[in-house]
Figure (spheres, one colour):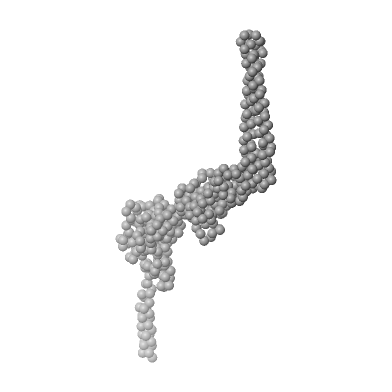
Length: 430
């Protein structure tokens, strides 16, 4: 009985020892950190400003009349091509011609009066020289003579005005162009008072148009003359039209407490598909680079959590493998969270840890985290150029093919690791 009990006890002890030995490696297994990374690649990047506006002709002239009357004849219609000086319409000239004739008669009368007063004055002047008439008679003759001169001048001015009014009855085109609108019909009475009535609207060459866009005050500082523009119109949804910024107007436009500025875009229109009044959605290219180094904006905005950073910096410090800063970017002397990269969690780093204060003072200097086979990841300071919110241009600090971390997380299976953007993620045990 005792022998049997001893055998059973020995067997249980062997099983327990075997289990402890077998499970010991698993109890010491460290968690593996998985990295999602992206590679630095070459490509094109643009920074743009969007705006909406209305297509207009470069030059639009409203043709009116300065005299009142009845439209006797209208010689042009909508969409007619006209030349400068071409006859567009003619008012009834009956009353205007009568005013001209009346003014001419007044001139003739004033001329006759002047001739009579001049003869009288010359006759009395001879008598005055011989002292045969009184001084008052001579002065009266001189006054009548000079007054007649003024009357003749006034009559001539009235005649000239009557001639001009008669000429205004003939309405001609002031420019070469196209009749965009005809607002009158034959037989209609037009009255020219304080506001000149518009009879025709004429636009010049429709092969050159302009887009009058409204740009928000937050974006107007980026817009400059001669920048490239692409825009679309609802009439041709599958087409993109091109133009350039020709003018940035300084006059602000305030609507519902929103301040905008008018930006004029010149656009060629050789096929005359663009018509005045169309609504355009424009994209202004304020910055463009071709075949430059690019990195996703997620990598620039990423910072590991404070727990990971504490472990990483402690391990780096213990191993004496602190990374070197790029040339021209000295490490900060402090160890407070303010010296950490933008977006760092508020954690006090261990004494002697590395800090990157330069990234906080220069908006074009950023810190990214690069995959490292030995350390897992390491900080790297870069200079950026164009930032369009999705991608950034790399000016220095990285080269093509470098793997930059966009996220960090614990991984216990290969399935989780496959979430990385560029192949399986790297790992670093802690």
